Length: 474
Image (cartoon, rainbow, N blue to C red; front, side, top):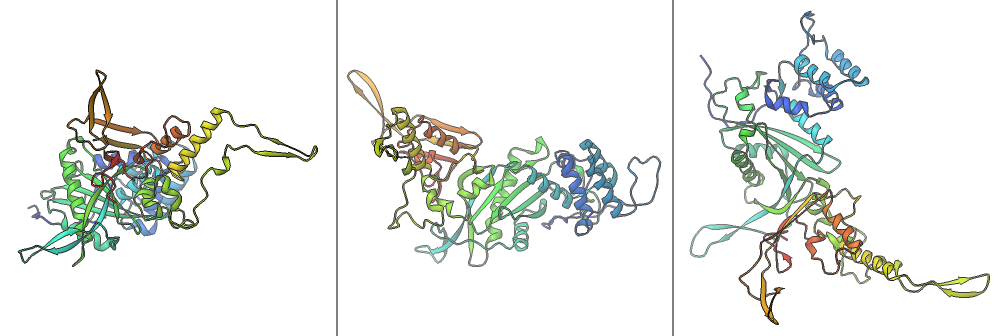
């Protein structure tokens, strides 16, 4: 008689194994490089991870076994080190893992480690949506005895994140018709905490789902979904990825539902008695974590993009300092330069720059003034895409018998064209800077959201400015 399966919100143990024939295992393992697979297998064999990643060991020399098990972890480690020292196909390593040493299945902990290894190999693999963590305050409602929760937009408080408590609270918020495995990984080079959430649909009929080493049912793991969260140190923001699904049939509305479920649970998991929080989308997206950290992180450049980036330097405390900084590119002034000839004892004037050279200098000074120290092609902070909708109204009047359309600076108008701008590239704002430096774009007239100083990648522009509730939220 099969065991009774009841709903539970308990999280999956890291020792739960998944059959190697499932889609999720094949997808995670096959996308790694040969070197990454060998390094990963050696990490699994090491003592700290061996209990959660136990390989198949033995002394049985079966002549029909293409990958006979070895007798000890030390011999198995030496086997993979020998593979590392020579060249060969990736399939040699993946087959050895899936059909040999871990033929009984990979644990959830192993799959999480493989996912993290792929993340290190491809740091721009995920597209992140940035949310701001805002505290809630209680205010009494007139005429009632209850208090209403209001968002405190002016607070600079950063919630304390205790990983184990946060995951416990997060799991309690997830509906009991889902199973989840959580994995924490620290990115010390970027001061980021990565949380991987592996979700499995309604496993009530799955009597094999347990933490005693038995495999899970492929019906559930083949419709699994993976979501990633990143918490930057000392910043009231969280980066959330899109749902990664192992099956095309499990995408769409279902994936969005799972994502909204986890997103709604994050502020509840962070909240404490008399200390509640909510999430607000900042209209910022991107794949480059360094770019997101510069716009929505804990550094001084968080609200100092574009031309204001010169004040993100710790040496310049404020733009209101009594001693103003030296104007950028002032040494490139086009004024006449007087040169002395010590042999003849005479002085002569350096010839003036041509009109073309003066235009180039002017364009470069304009770019430096508008972008400051930001938007450099080599700064590794590239934003790949910027989507802007222009909602500015236009006014139309007749002049000399012809119809003329002008930009409306405030006059009410019932006509506004649907204009959407999408900029794509490895570094959108660096490309804008180069266009200004070459005189293609007038740096004096370009709007601030084109320099990146608004700190948004998705927004709506009205009367030339990105609106607060559609833009940065500052």
